[in-house]
Image 1 (cartoon, one colour):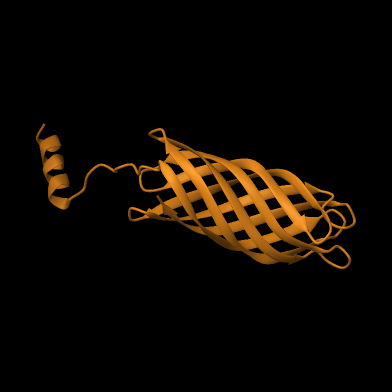
Image 2 (tube, one colour):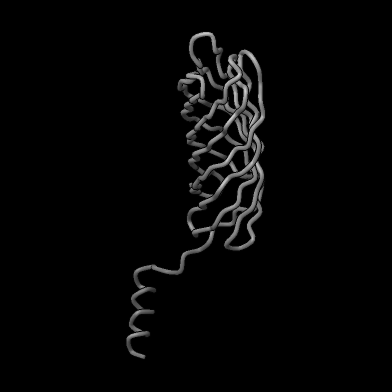
Length: 172
């Protein structure tokens, strides 16, 4: 019993307390900046920087957070000789994750639309991310996403893209 009392007194004196979970419920908007690389089955591929806006909404169920997001990434990714270029990626994402108290770890599934200088295609998107709040309204996060498009390069081959984004958002 003395050990329990001593532990409680030490915790109070040092300011240590239980980890308070972040409330992730609400709308947010922001920008992402990152890196994209593409590899095609017919030799098309390349890499480029990416940037663009995003908007979403999360609902906090306690330890579990569920949300939806719309994101646009502008690219200038040259796919190679006579293959054209990948100009943008738009994504509609469902994300679900665990509230670790001061951070949110999550997985992403959804749909992605690739626009190229030739043709466009829609594919599934999946990935992982982590978000960390900086004060009441600002959040920084990072995501790693994968998309596999069929028939996007001019040659009609498959094109897989990886996108790694650093994001900053404002919560309303």
